[in-house]
Structure formats: C-alpha cells, structure tokens
Amino acid sequence: MAHGDAGRSSGRNFTGRNFTGACHCGAVRFAAEIDLASARRCNCSFCRMRGAVAVTAGLEDFAIVKGEEALALYTFGTGTAKHYFCRHCGIYTHHQRRSDPRELGINAACLDGVSPFDFAEVPVTDGVAHRSDTGIYRIFGVLRFERGPD
Image (cartoon, rainbow, N blue to C red; front, side, top):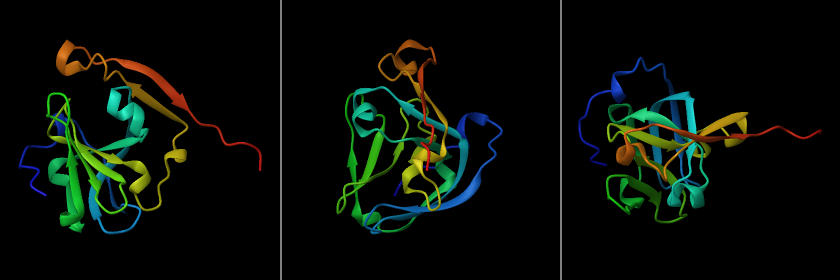
C-alpha cells in the first residue's frame, strides 16, 4: 500500500507498542507501532455509521504484511481521508486521516489481543465541524464502557 513517506505523526512524542492485526477473514494482515492511549471515535457521517474505535499509527509505522490486493478503498467528501477495508469480509482495517494525512487510524478491533471493550472511555472527536474546516480541534463527547456483572 503506497501511503507515502511523510514524517512521524505531528512531531509528537509517540510512545507506541508493536502490534499485529488482521481483518475478520485473515486475508489482510498488518503490523504497526500503535499508541493505545490515542483511542478515539469520530462523529462524522461515515465514522458514526462505522462505529469503530481507532488508534493512531504514523504512516512509516504501519505495514501490510499480507493481502494488499484484498484491500479496497473508500473515499468521500474532500477525498483526503482514505478508508481501507477487506474486499472479502468487509471489515474496515485502517484509514489515512483527513486531520493529519501523516497518520493512520487503525481499527482497534482488528488488533491481535485488543478489543474495543478494553477501553473504559473513548473520546469522540467532532468530525461534523472538522478541524480541517474550522481550525478548531474539539471533543464532541466521550463514550464509556463498563462491564456488567458476571
């Protein structure tokens, strides 16, 4: 997957761990350095329907290790964000962000050993009034998860 050769995400002090992951059917496999503390969702029209928790990786910290040919691409609106999914099982694996095209949002549910239910709180960014349009980064809300009694 040609994601370009942009620099590390936003010049931040990135403290990631190495993860592997896959789509549901296993046709697509990837490896990435990911910061789990970066978990978030978005309220834009697409993310609202997709419902995935995304974690951050820099472009240079992500590699498709199997099944690049199984990936399909979806874009909408400005076309800046590039959403990838498996053309066999339909699972969204990752996207190149509109807010910072040097970053990828990785579907946390695709990471080996990680579940979206591992995150007690997930900030929801305002993708309707997107910072690329307004110049303002805003948290729209917070999703909370609490396990029920066994």
